[in-house]
Image (cartoon, rainbow, N blue to C red; front, side, top):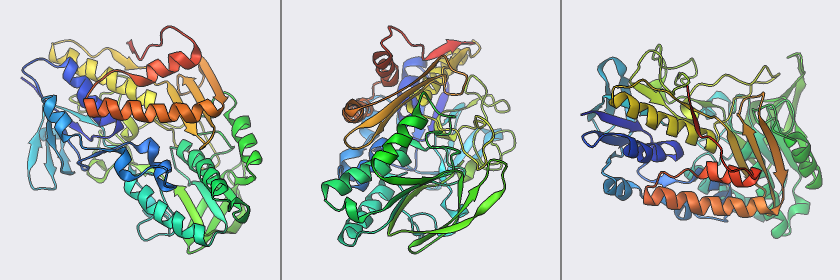
Length: 428
């Protein structure tokens, strides 16, 4: 009999628990440990920030679903991990022991690395968490009564650029609907070396498509840009040349700003030699298994992935939905193998599928694999992307609420590419 603990219950952790349930033996048990007692559909956060969704619209109480699936549920954050003892301590004073651990925590948001950044005592908004998005909506409603310049983007070290582009265009759409777009100069500020880099060195023609979209919507942009500090109504930024030298600082005024922060691993995982890298991200091999602690696996945004290549300003690599889904499937099968005395042999495909909604249009891209060079390098745009994103939201929330483990991204990718089969995992 083995006890498997899944740490985290977001996009990766929830489906990790469901897929594990299908792979373990009858005598094995699963416990989900999470800081958030409810599931929030993060991809819809930009819609919450402009009032197109409420927090309740994208929230699911998954405790009952876990119970029906025979999965124990502990809604208390981990405060300390002791991997040598296969044990973790929780904020409620209890401890949980495990035979196998799957880390699926997502990131810690590093707002504190830049003075004045973030919604907690800072001067910028965020769409990284539903609570942030709700606060961003309150700020947006106040802004609409006295509009002015807007800044949207992602700071140095960020590793999730899609939501920044999404929010910029969703915000622009809502401003037009309110008939105040003419009063709002918009600037997109990013650490990417070019528009559409996305931490992936581009996918298909994302550079051309996104530059064209920004021009069409009269948005200015600044690339290879560091945010030095943020004050009330003013952002100090530094432009960096291709050789890494400074091109000087400038101040950009704003009345409303949403900037995605850099990510790092959560505090209890930071500084554990052999488990985490200097940023606190969990180190894994091709089987999602930690090389030092063989009974620890990790999936999702919390894992360590090197950048695609050097950039003038640091850019992290995103972990998109299909990539996470493939990690989850590989991990579930690998733990199932180990429980039955076999070696782990499943490898996630790490393909990237993204639907970037622009409010009334959007851009979709597929990168197979996510890191270049690729076998598939495709992007497209149109109103269908907005509709597909709505369908994705409804499908995934139903999937989480029902506790099913069927893969969504694989089916969506096959449909977009017009192919019969796309492997989520491989043997190796």
